[in-house]
Length: 431
Image (cartoon, rainbow, N blue to C red; front, side):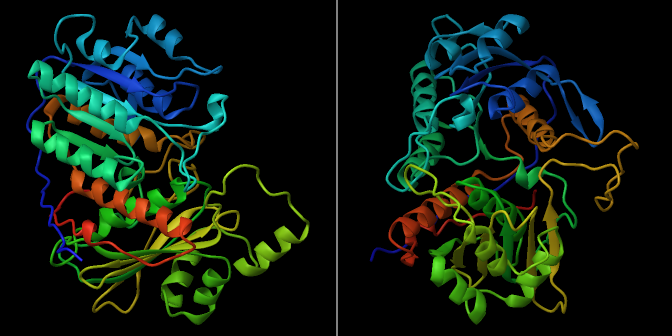
């Protein structure tokens, strides 16, 4: 076994906004109503809210490339309505039809979703095949050819495999491309908001709901955004294992793989069905629900991702889809008798629900379930102006690597995978 390679990085504050709006290109795989392209690019065009305050974007989306428009595509219509150049390739979107890069930033969204009107194409591990890696490498090639390193934002994880994710990170560093990535979850309102800087974190249990990669990646991001501030800074992950079926329920009952106390605290923080989860799944499946066709993908019906960090911190992400109605986590801090418990409602802001030190909405003005994208767009807007990410790219590199290892472990029947390549070391005092 080769020695781990340490990857070092840091997060810094952002300089003042430039005087004129920067021109930005949007490179997306698909653009349908309520797609990530619609919810991110649409808000960069039309505006967004932060803490109930409307904000006009400080950048201008000047060009758009839609790689694979489906039957529900609205990208061409948006481009025409907003007088945005619709281009036939990544290269032309960056150059806007000219001889060299003619934008100051690019937003990459490689989403692949059945709601586009087309079936998903999956790899052997059940992961959707998307073009995010190809998008980035084409952007990098154009920037290198034209000698114009510009800020690049990538929605969610960096690549579908560890090799892709690491290549994106290394290429950005080699070319001096400012890089920011991730989802809306770490920047969505939650209460409590953060782990104290320098706290001693011992263990985390997260409970989540959803189908596919999202119920794994989103809790990983949320947890990482909090525990990366712990004493000693982030030093990376030693092993990852995916548990399901009998292995999951044996771990649930034994209490050896994660703390039952933390699990109970996380469950108590958010709504879920009244009966115990194992009874819930037994009852739900007793009716003989048909199996979903196609390659098997994570369903969240009694599954877990177990992560052991190099500094001894333990994490368990418990996937209880259908049973959980929200996402939450509980953190054991050394020296504190009670766990720190936080919940992430994604974007939903109900008028009758306090969010903890956040001004409540005006009665009758509930926020939509996609409000969390407004918060992400705020940071993208800032990054496209300044070229300085407000949170470290190493966070997304690490969560991308953990997700990749979890999918490989699942594909190998729950094998425990040692991950020396995830000795990713960085410092963060930000979100």
